[in-house]
Length: 360
Image (cartoon, rainbow, N blue to C red; front, side):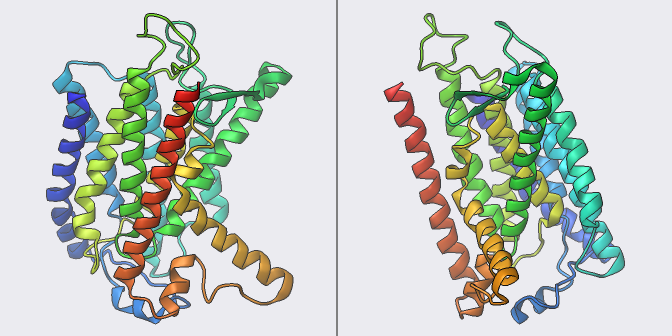
C-alpha cells in the first residue's frame, strides 16, 4: 500500500511542478495548438495555447512508478512494464501527430493510415507480450478469454494455438484503438479528459488493490472469489502514478487551460486504460467504469452514421460536449457536469465489481 501512495504522490509532484516548466519551453518554441475551423467559435481564443502536455503526464507516471519501486525495494513485474510500454508507445504516436499539427499549422496531424499502422504495431507487440512471461501456476499477464470482472469462459484460443493468438491480438487491438480514440474524442474542453481520466484510473487503483488482497497466489485456499491476475500490485502502482500525474496536470489544464494534453496525452491515457482492462481481466466492466468515454464515442458514431443515411444531424455538433456548447452551456458547466456523470459510472462499475465478488 505504501508503494501505491508513493507512486501517486511522486507523480503528482512531478506533474504539478514540472508542467509550468514544460509550458515555458513550449512557449519559447512557439508550440501552440491549432484550432479546427469548423469547431465552436469560442475555441478560437485558445489558438496558440501550448499543447503536447501529455509528455508531462507520461514522464510523471514513469517517474512515479520507478520511484515507488525504488522506495519499496522491489523489482518491476511484467504486467506493469507491459502497461507502461503500451502507454508510452501510443504516447509517441500521439506526439508525432501533435508535432505535425504544430509544424504545419493545421488541425490534422498524422494521416489515419499511419496512425492506424502505428497503433497496430504497438498493440500487436503488447498483445503478444501479454501472453508471455508466465509466473507461478503458468499465469501470464493477459488471458485469451474475454472477461467481465474476471474471465467468463469464452476462450478465443478455442480454435487452436495460432488462430487463438490471432483472435486475441485482434480483440486486444480493438480495445486499444477504441479506448485511445475515446479519450482522444473526449479531450475537447479544458480539463474534461484529464478529470474523467483521474476518476477512471482512480477506480482502477481501488480495483487492483482489491485484487491484490484477494489474489489467488497469496490466499491459503484458492476459491471462486480469488483473482487470477498475474501482478495486481504492480498494476495498482502504475494506476496510482497515472492518477497523480493527471491530478497535477489538471491544475494547469483546468479552464482557462494553460496547456493541453494533446494527442500525446489522450492516446497514452486511452492505451493505458485498454491495457489495464486487459491485464486486470475487466475488459467489459471497463466500458461501465469508463462509461462517459463510451457515451462520447457513441455520440460521434451516431452523428456520422445518421448523417450518412439521411443527410441530417442528430446533434448540433459531435462529440457530445460540443453539442452542449452550441446550445449555450458554459464550458466549465459542461466539464463539471460531465465529471459528475463520469463519477456515477465509476461508482456503478465498482459496485458491480464488488457485487460480483460477493456473489462469487
